[in-house]
Image 1 (spheres, rainbow, N blue to C red):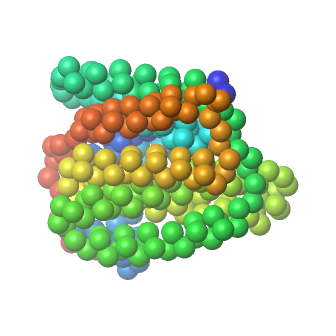
Image 2 (image 1 turned 135 degrees about the horizontal axis):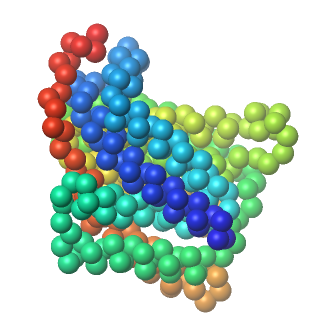
Length: 289
């Protein structure tokens, strides 16, 4: 439990720093970018030419390594709530590096997230067994296809609602990462390579990362991140409790619910501190071609 919680909080630190870098790098790529197979290579190439984006990618990969440890050792609701603490990291960095000031409400949100995570840690029981769940695996594959198709359609729009919906789809993609990590089979390398969740995990992560980058281009970071955090936290938590056998300590059900709610509310308040203004003008769209 202690190792898993430490890994989740370590991942939160890395994700919190990466969020600011990803916003800066994504906004230096033209908003004409789309999740279109014909333009995807150019879009990814443009992102990879941004040093801030490369930094975000490296931090996200390192963070995922720690997150993976947490996902294998903790109930999904605790592992995902721990990742929501990345917003606390972002808020605190913003006050030091970006001259942002926290109001009394926002400091209360920081404390609330810490208290909520404490309640979740105390009330968490054993994680359910990582066993084959064919129905859930099929659902993951179908969900990925739907997310990709909807993401491609939404990426053609620059309307504000597209920002929120792309963030929502990114959250579902990151939820797929968490669920896939729990469904990975222990055993030989051949068993691992033969399991479909070995492939849904990286595909989910890559798709979510691109969708979040597209969302960050089109509107405020607040609008993009709020639905992402909500979906990537709530969806795996529900799957873990109702389908994968994650447990709550006896007599601590209300404590777990209260901790989850307080953490979610605090995270949503703090999400506005991910707003980053790009000081440089965007490059012309034709530079992508």
